[in-house]
Length: 213
Image 1 (cartoon, rainbow, N blue to C red):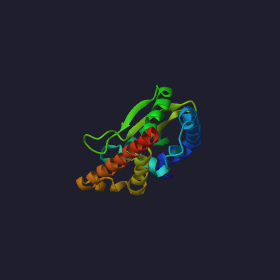
Image 2: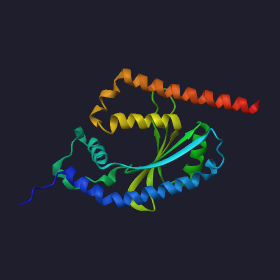
Image 3: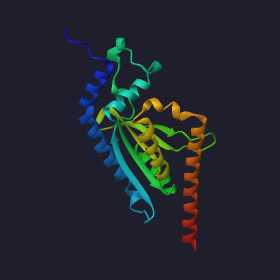
Image 4: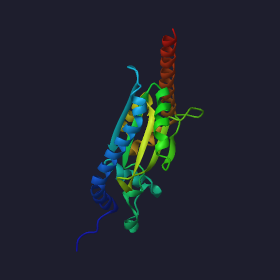
């Protein structure tokens, strides 16, 4: 008699079954987003940027993400059949980063009306009293009614820092998540985002004054 598979083994097998569908969702969604953004990108000045990138959640990352959502962070092997990666909201992701910040508002105006059936989920601020770091949307596109996708809209500088933070801490070592949430590091994180926002605001002010003069 063969040994029964674990929940993690089952989810890894499910991932590779879903992978072709995930790729179709990523291709369709990126194409849609780029199309809706033409009204913005065709008007960009030489110092302005709108970057669009897609990503598929890696297999181990997807399994770990679902595991962290369980009580005490463990799968209950007795509930083997109840687990599915389809419960994740971000198997596919599209990130839109814009610079300077006023272009973030233009991006939101171009995208949000075209995804009215999707769920809005603001990216939380870095600290109390701070503005949200960006916007997330979750939903389905016509390429799949099973695989949910995420669209993330954020300023270029904040988005790049979030990329570094995710790659350096959460992706390779999810067990460090608690360690990096010490009060000292969270305060440094808040200061980083505040400094990036101050730079963006100062940059826009200089550009505005140069144009007016």
